[in-house]
Image (tube, rainbow, N blue to C red; front, side, top):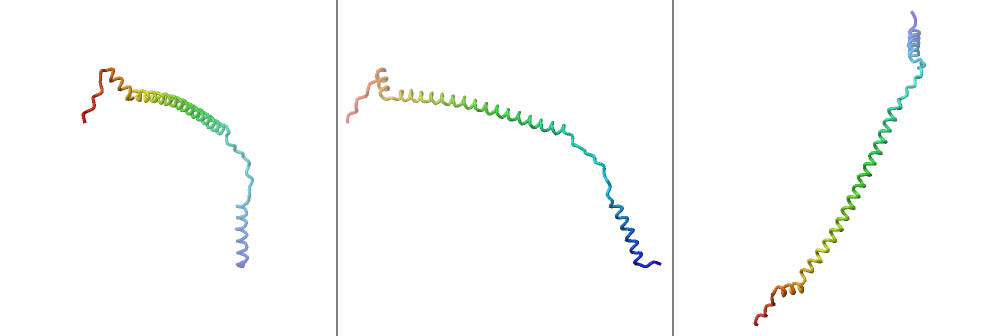
Length: 116
């Protein structure tokens, strides 16, 4: 029989040999898989085109809002002028001297002062 140390040594060498065999590196053939470029280019183009169209639509809506604001400002100015004209006419109609002249032309007289 062999000694336990010899058995252990042979067992370790057998295990070591198996581990070395498992761990042996092998050359893997180089296969360069490139991602297709066409879908990426199409995606970037679509995003850029959508951005440009979005900016054009936004600019157009801003211009329309600006035109509407200008129209409303002009209308507000015209209404302010009309209001001023109507206030002046109203002040003229409320003038006491004008009311007295109109009353005289209609035949109205000033009542006599009551006796005190």
